[in-house]
Image (cartoon, rainbow, N blue to C red; front, side, top):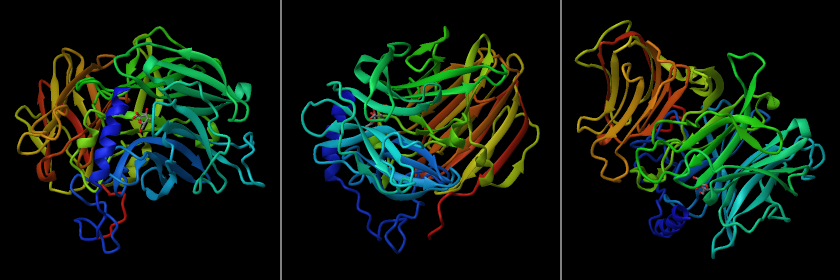
Length: 517
Ligand code: FRU
């Protein structure tokens, strides 16, 4: 598969340009740890202290800790040596990075996967009363064209120390592109379900197991919807339809690896039914998971509220087209802000809604209320200095039948992200342009229709040094994009034509990292 093979070449190069973590480097404190304050270092999003990160893996909540594992190169700032890095949080806001949880072996790298709490010790990995956490990951051969296989690792100390299972692999169908297992407990049949991608075939396969060790194939889904790139990182979960009491739907999310710019983050969402064996999509076109360019490989947390159906997801805020070229150091790779998901019936279909988790409000400080105004010639809302704070903006804009507005986040040399809506077309547009010399793929333009043709648009923006996220209305449409303003300084402006801001609130956000300067 081209993308991964190309990454292999990059990995070899990456080994030659290891980023040093010397105390003399800018932004490092006396103990030689990066102070999370370098140019472009996000202040309210997780990024590793140093080195390369891609997909979130093994998201699992256990005994008061949110575990975040992630695709990690412990030795360099490009893709390679893939292992599971680890960070933990009590509130999904503040993170503490821990040592590598599952390291690559001599024969295979540790690719993406999921983790579960095996409450009934079906796997037999438990020790005494200690409940095992079990990670299910893809082993990717380091040498030669062998198959990708599904494997287990387990922890009996709540997720800190991990052991690879001696009986690995637990699933090997001899296929070279067979990866990213998402496992969950399916209560009606008292079985584990694995959702896994036959990436090159653009198919998702379903397997069932009583003990996580032996798996039986129960069904397939796809190809469907967007099949232009390989399919990766499936996720499957059930949610209530909030405005149809008593109704539930299953959501199958599949990422499609980007093959050119201007196709959005790549995630597509199918809404339908799952009977414990296979998924059937409702007769509605798939929904784009995110309209921006930088939202990939998202996954949902396992074991939230004891499995009562709350769905919170985390995505990698990047894009394979240029992820290895982004101008950050001594780390590369950022997670998006965690999202709370729900479903709503509208315009004859069921929409997936995504909003920032409510805990975001805990970071707010220094509120400014701008009240009501029109900005036909533009109004500067914020001027953020290099290495400045992250901000949140909430706005209600009256657009009527023909009004339009646009937010521009960018630097004086024209590197910007413009996010706007035009009521006459009903379309939301995201344009990124400027002097992004580090990659020809970076400048892009995306647009999507907003359901329901509202005359008032509600917008929630999170802007953080090198990223912009927008959540529109109830969350029917979201945008995640990276940006690299000149010397890290940018302004946020708004312009309206035939539209009026009815209310706008701005907050500076507390940074999530301990201040170590
Ligand atoms: C998605 C992906 C996965 C794979 C991992 C390797 O971004 O390509 O399919 O498991 O990255 O790092």
